Amino acid sequence: MSKPKVTLTRRWPASVEAILQDEFDVTFNKDDKPLTLAQLHTALQNSDAVCPTVSDKIDAKVLGAADIKATLLASYGVGYNHIDMGAAQAASLSVTNTPGVLTDCTADLAITLMLMCARRAGEGERELRAGQWTGWRPTHMMGRSLKGKTLGLVGMGRIAHATAKRAAHGFGMNIIYYNPRPAKAENLADIKAVKCNGIDEVLAQADFISLHCPGSPETHHLINESALSKMKPSAFLINTARGDVVQESALIKALRNQQIAGAGLDVFEFEPNISADLMQLNNAVLLPHLGSATEETRIAMGLRVVDNLRAYFSGNTPPDKLI
Ligand code: DGY
Image (cartoon, rainbow, N blue to C red):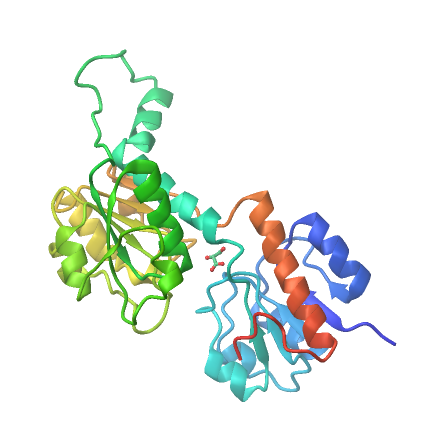
């Protein structure tokens, strides 16, 4: 029996590509360059499953290709706002993602950003590498402590919970949160989190605001000029969720005017393009979408896609089926 044809849009960890090669008829992206619209069309027309990543925009234009052969989009990543689900459904495609396996890794990065902001780590490294450090002194580059501060979470899913656990148990922080729906009991275990009635309460009370909501039309520019104006001048904004949850132009203004203390960003509204104005700001810590970027996690994400492909092509429901 012929093997199902599978296309990967980017390079994946070698050990996962080797497993896929054994079990499927795979088209790899050896150059690791993002596929063009025409290449995505070809992939959908020639493969049984296409495996995009969170940086491939799979919109109605892509999914409107004539003669689509693929019946599965097995996405490599937990977020799926890069896929137009309505258009996928209209094209009779099933969609899967990779939840769970990147929770701890992303929570680690949210804490990394909090610490980098609070302890001015990026600023300090820039000073040292520029040869401008003149030696230890009592008033040099003083930051803030996390202990006793309030972490405000926007969203209370798995990653928010893992971030809160680290913040509460590792750093002695108090936790408050807002989630539009009642949070699952397992996501509240162990963290003594206080529920807020709206996002404004979180914005007004927290010393660190960490975003953990999905990217969607409802969360687009959730953090805009008005939201930023509700934060304490001493507070930091942390974003490991999706770039367009924050209106970049409004954030730049707030950071430039020191209306808030700083921001730690792993995702950006127009990534991979970063505004030159943002790059100038010393009170912004900027990372290139590294939330899930550990070898262990990226392999686990790939294996999760393998599980979804195996289940789908053996006629079973994939474990991470979204539609
Ligand atoms: C995701 O999976 O949604 C992340 O943004 C990339 O790991």
